[in-house]
Amino acid sequence: METRATRVITPLPQEEWGIIKFIRISKNNIDGRNINADIVYVRSLSGEYKMKETPKSHTAKEEFDRLLYGIPQDSFPSDKFDMMIMDMVKQKYPDAKTFNKLMILNVEKEDMQYIKQHPHSIAAIYVFPNISINNMQLASMCRVYQKSLDIYVDWFNSDDFNNEGFNLYYSPDKRDEVNLLMQRFDIEIKKF
Image (cartoon, rainbow, N blue to C red; front, side, top):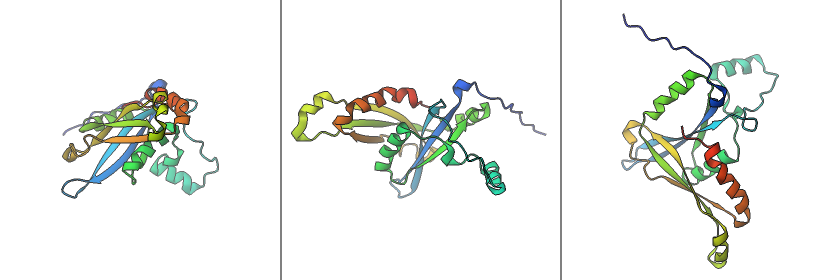
């Protein structure tokens, strides 16, 4: 008789607690088959980036559903970084959907290692100033930013999401705000 190893469930150190963000994108490949991929990144929990308060008055059915189906997706936080990424993705993949997974236990982190075994590629993110040809003097005052995110695909579609890129344009009068946002991008958005 074969026995399975027992997994001990323990909490992760609090500084490792986070939310794994998945953005599911899909497209038709060259054969016309619908194929899926997940853009995956991690957000750390903090005083500003935390789970939304749930209403205290649950009905018995709502409490049962919560226990059965887990944390409702609308309970997870979303801020300007998440919205910026989703806005860029939706320009190219309008049907993109977000899914969140809480990571506070060692088994949740271990389970995520399975995803890392899948083929992946890098998606480039470009943030450009929206400057007209008639106003090129603004170009010297604005920056172009480049960041990246990981895209994980299934085994059969490993090349179908290579060379993905997403663009976002900002108004030059928002350049200071965008500069601060992009300086914090690598702190707030972590690769899995």
